Every structure is written in C-alpha cells, then in structure tokens.
Image (cartoon, rainbow, N blue to C red; front, side, top):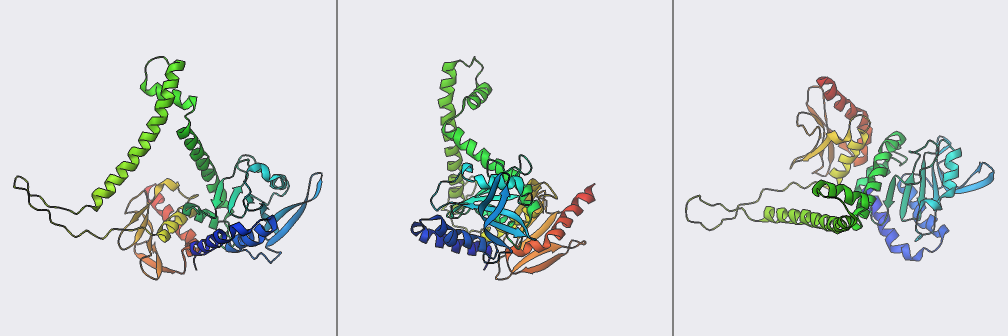
Length: 361
C-alpha cells in the first residue's frame, strides 16, 4: 500500500478515536507512535526510537524529551508531545529549544498533540531552534502538497539536505499566507498607504487613509469574488455543448458535438510531480520545472519545453511506469512498485536536467 493510502487510514483512525483520547500518554500510544510507524520507524527498537530521551543540558540535568529518532546512533529528530486537543505554539516546546543548542546532530524538532505536527529547524541561527515552524502538518486535514516533504523525513527516504533546502521556502510561504489572511481581514496602515499612493494623487490625510482602509478591504473581497466567478464561468462554458453556426445564414438548431475526453491529473501524478520537483530543488530552480498532462502520460519538463523532457509518468494503467530518457532521447520505461520508488532515480533525473543546461552553455 502506498504512503498516501496508509496516511488516509491513519487519518480515519484518528478521527474515529479522537474523542476517546484524554491524556498525553494515550495520545502518544494511540496517535504519535502510529505516525512514527507510518514514517517507517520501529517504535519498539531503541536503536531507532528512544522514548523519554535524556540528556544533560547546561545546568539542567536529566531533562527528557518525549521521543528521539536516531540514525547511526545519533539523535536527528526530537519530538515533544502534548495531550490531544492542546493548542500548540512555540512556547510549549521549551525542551526542544534547549536540546537544539546542545545536540548538534538533531536538526529537526517536532511539537505535536497527535493530530497537528509543527516542524522546526534552525534556519535563522545554527543550532538555535527557530521560533516559527517551517511546516505544519494536520493529520485530520492532510495537505497533499506537503506529503513529499513529509516523506523526506521517513526512514526509507531520509534526505536532510533536501528538507533543509525546502524548509526556508515552506516557512516563509506559510508566514506570507498568514500575513495575507490578516491583511485581507484588516488591512494594515502600511498596505493602505502603499495601495492608495498608486491610485490617489492627493495628500493622504487621516480622513483619506480611513476611507482607503475600507476601500482596500472591499477591493480585496471583490477581487477574490471576481476570480471565483471567472473560474465558475469558465467551467460552465467548457461544459456547454459545442454548437455549429453558419455565418451570414439563418441560425440553425445547435447540434451537440461529442466532447473530447478530458485530461484528469490524478493524485498520484501530482504527488510524483512534487516529488521530482523536490529531488531537483538543489540542481535547478524549482520554478523551471513544469508539468504537462496528456491522455497517455503526464510529462515533467524543464522550462515547460517539450524538447526538454525530464521524465514521463505513465500512471494510467494498473502498473505505473517512470519514463526516463537516454542520451539519444529515446524513452526507457521503468516499472514502479509505488510513487516512492522515484527516489531511487534521483541521480539520473539530476543528470538529465544538467545535460540540458550544459548543452546550452
């Protein structure tokens, strides 16, 4: 069973039993340990998962963090647990902050209440855990875009370099979304002044700023509504039957034309595309990687250029194939047991991308 399906199973179980879990210990055993197992870690093997991990931190002796994930005998992830239903914030992970300063091998800190997982690292200052998480994963409402990032922290696909490379983008994108939501709800003076200065030539007096505060909020709301309406209209037009009309002649009864089969990009194709994009993040600017879906395959391209195929995803049949390209541009189809198998072809994907850039140099 592939990772998304197993994740959905865990989500369903958590939803069903959430009301029954009332203590921190119950949260650990019912929710958090199964989550670690989902990531491939043996929660009963002390060489991989250490509960109540103890270390001396400065003047504090014998402090414990709920779980530590080990690799090669060294802690790489620290997990602090709270009872299910507890509101999470950075102020509730004091042990993680202290451990980060001492345990230099631990680059990921996780604060969780069993349903929400806040992921921290040290982007702002080495060995000092950031105040803000770079990723928040909600087990009750999983974000499919974050699944490839979560997989990088799994036992089988551990890729700390790729995780840290993506962490900054995830962290600041998340922060910007929060700021945008706040600005939509209550535009700040700075934003009002900026936007007003672009459309108003007079002096921005207090009265004018007050007027533009209301105008800015309404303009945001109308802009979003217009975007939604445009999408709905476009969808309605696309779904209407095609009619033929003779120009300059009497209008004839519209006749339905059989609609061409629509291309549907599946969840697995989305997951595979984001996985490829993540694997190539340190090789090429992610913005240059594009996806074009067709009826027969889903193509991943460099610069959205058909002459620069990175790979093809043949996912329409029972057997999934990854299409890779040889030096002569012929395609080789490689069977995949799961989407995760794409990780094993990371170096070949990188070589393909580099070959295009070197040919243009």
